[in-house]
Length: 192
Image (cartoon, rainbow, N blue to C red; front, side, top):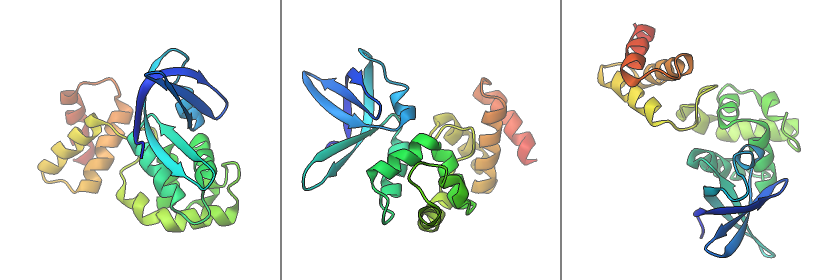
């Protein structure tokens, strides 16, 4: 099972890239956001989901491991295959998908090509608990060591995890270029 590819981008297409890994070219399907970050001749590392079918083995790649994990969760929903999973991740950010599921807003998911109202409702129902446990906020990266550190520092002071996550996320969104010490001061003001 292939779970990570590191190599050079040989070329990109509309829905895929070919990664040259020591002379072997792997075709990797990816959402548009991932493909936009890849350029011919550039070194790249992609987190991979291997999909084995009767007639093909297909690879799906993501710049971010959390986005890959969300793709796996999406495709675990009955009726959502890899093509629909990529459509969702092309149209919406991981934060938008998870926030729509947590807030029971299937209309947001239905914006993706191929996702009808019934399928959107099914995804919301199936991923609601997962989305509620995952700290994604609009405008923040899907994974940030700074977000984790800031959240942890607030929890260590006795704040509730959800309060700490929200304050940390909002602080990083409001002050994206500040060093940790300043972010910590701003976060304390938010939770006070």
